[in-house]
Length: 350
Image (tube, rainbow, N blue to C red):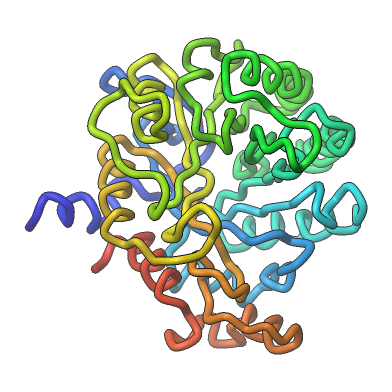
């Protein structure tokens, strides 16, 4: 078996909530990593939705059952955009988060609640003023639920320096300090409700976990987000290149930070071109070697390479495609090349 395939096949540390229980960040062999309730390494592998305001039809019983059983996912990420016609102007999208959490519970998956900061790039922007109340309300609602430990909180998807989108976040230590200023009050209230894993986004579209490692948040069970797209973000075999996300990830791990790959795709960062599967294989080998959990972007019929389904511009037909029906498994001919790849890598097969 080749070196790559050795780390791409199998599901050594992949376990469901019914087996793994409450998650925690612990040091294993000198690296901070995700562990189960007994202290053993655990890896989460699954999918992210696209923006729930656009492709909310994916939140249905048949789809979640298919992801859990046919795709063998043990995690689902609910991407709730705030700007771009998301929660800030359409708060009813929150109902899909509640529904998604319940479906994840019913199908034995962990569930990431993603406060999807993208445009504007500064999580302190007025657009995101509802963040504290959102996490306060949701955590209070589920705090006494017996499966509350299955919820993972993601506080800010991708802080970034895109000035065209309005308020922006600097790609340097000052930018990370601004993210900490936003995140710490939310972390305080979430810690009043339990020790659930909390993922905090990092500067430059969550490519700068190194900055978080140099100035970590003083709280337990904190993980720092990393994101990559295999056509744009190339692998790196050392920790000295601050312009490379894999290098920054290596630096973070070497310096005591725990990381979670909450979004990655087989395309370029735009969502288009490719898929770049050979490059993705190198990345996934790295992730599996270091027990880094991941969610692939994304469960959509949108016409982009990173989408998991064959594109379907018609609204009614798109909604139908996102529900696999009573057999609770999508026909392979409606899954895109990227989707078939992600499904295989979740399952640990060729």
